[in-house]
Length: 579
Ligand SMILES: *[C@@H]1O[C@H](CO)[C@@H](O)[C@H](O)[C@H]1NC(C)=O
Image (cartoon, rainbow, N blue to C red):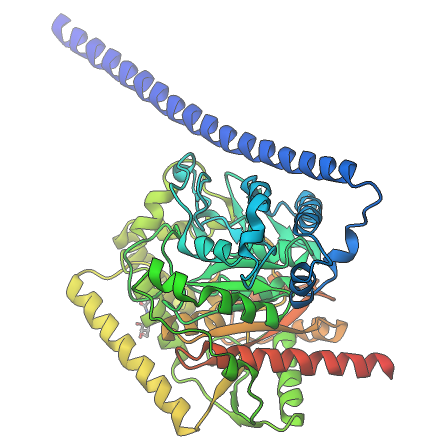
């Protein structure tokens, strides 16, 4: 009897000991993480303070200097004035730093001020022939800049500064550009919002109650708020186009592999079938084209010989012959919001009036494409890698909705079977997150996806289209809704297809759009549509964009269509205000 009690006592003691041990270990881990995050935040505060001091010093040295007119100059004019000496590059840089600090204090869009930008001024004259001579630019947080973190918003990647500049930064620096700020991203980059446990939440410049979009969200907020004239981001499922549309700026997702990805950090690496793409974001299309021209040169092709050496085709960008333009409103997956539809109608009318031929185009089998090809291949690992990044530290609220993705496979399968009775759409998405079970399955899925791409191109060529216009998700949504996949089809389709695609702001939400949204029926019949209405509400005055698409490697043609749409839109607004 005694020995039994001793056994129980020993077991109890062991239990208590283990419990204490793990408690201690966990609290240590938590403390370590908290310390790491604190260091990262302090570092950000310190460099922002340096930026403030630099501006203060500069203004003291140049009393009476008015920096504000610089902010209104479009990129070509700014570039011209720096080149001909009527503006000094140090004045321009300090003007942009001042404005970016002001925008950042409102929107929380910056993650680091790059103090090296001030040093770059010392020998900037040696880059006088560069296409971006003296132009301050901003870069997304995951783009490597020597000495700074590229965390992708993930706690585990804090405190691992980049050993060297990414290829795009190197090339743009040689062209005379001055990267001066890094901008915020959502946790792990897989989100249409912009919030992470390290740097917090970035908000929309046009309405602080709305998200700026993601994952290139900090860029869109900063450029939309006037604090940058040109930025770089990346896009694997709408990450350049959706935030640009939400913040009323322009962006281009080029054909993947047109621009080097060397030195771009991401959470999921080695995944080859849905490709990420680096691209520019700016206030106008000419700036996007200038940035592409600056990137597509010998420097980039030498630094990264895996990139096809295709220079920018200026003659295609500047051409003005009539185009055959395909268009669609509802992609058969998600019914667009009333604002999205109206923006498309207006774009269509402008282009038709300008003499282009508009042809209805029906993209084939979009639901299958998005679920079976895009999601199943993107999440083929059953979300294992993404979840491994989210293990350390807290999961941000905007990722919470994606939490079921981290559940064990059999549980997700069971849940999707049950949900299929009442919510077939959500069940199908959940089923995609289960991943594929073998390499053979993955290859099979990739093969049907390849066939789909050619099926799509066949439809395109049957109608002899040059380009296509279609909606893009908008207006900007409320916080914590972005885990919903229902809004992504318009953007993600062109990642699956790897077609260049860009967005141009066309109009803003009217009271009538808002009114019509209340009667929105949707395609899923139920929960997902109700949430869609909720997240888009209360958005009068927010920007609405249209998406322009071309065939692979015809990035210049895509930009040309975007430029034309932008010009026609501006003309129309002018004549409206005159009336
Ligand atoms: C849901 O049910 C339909 C009809 O029975 C079936 O075709 C589909 O594969 C099911 N989806 C899932 C995710 O189980």
